[in-house]
Length: 265
Image 1 (cartoon, one colour):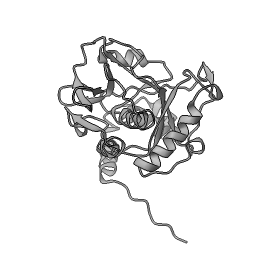
Image 2 (cartoon, one colour; image 1 turned 180 degrees about the horizontal axis):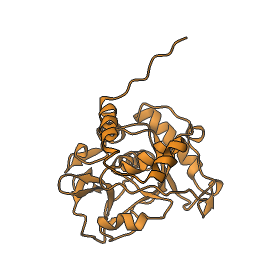
Image 3 (tube, rainbow, N blue to C red; image 1 turned 180 degrees about the vertical axis):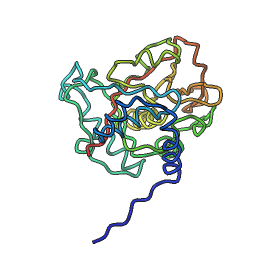
Image 4 (cartoon, helix red, strand yellow; image 1 turned 90 degrees about the vertical axis):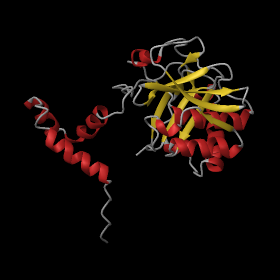
């Protein structure tokens, strides 16, 4: 039977036309052109590496086995089940995470918070993962105003389950790229933090960051170049999303390191 042709977004078509005209102006070395003409499957990864939003930290060029604990010596199996139930209940998406993602054999932490993003926008995260279970949300800065606010392909993030961020405390956000360069982890971003906050509260009744702040160095508030952060505000009893200058650190600031897993194709 004939199949329906896939629909190409107008923005994708327009970008392709733009780059077709600019590839000549780029004056790439002939050996580079010949390599990608020969190794056609390498073209898509190269484009994804090159075209990123401001503030995005490049993923590691290779993967490596994580040191630390065997999966059975962590509480990930229990929390994988918690995340699957949370996704079905609040995110309207049923999933078998073990079958859908390449769960590593070892993890650097014993207490793990798995965060599944089925393809939400920042706005859907606020409405579904937080507000739908009765959590108050204060958007000191509109979450739609940060880079990375739109939906992306499904991902599974694994982070250490701690009340406070444990990595790079006091480090100004502008140094995030240096901190994460060469590491097998990425900084958690605003949307996945919100999903993780919702899951953590749903299971424990507690809150992330009541006295600290988690920075999201890849989520930029334009045109000022400020970075997003999230925390729990005890005085107003709300999850707060706001922005911060990239050049200043503080003892209450920190990153949450994440192992990022893509769908098994």
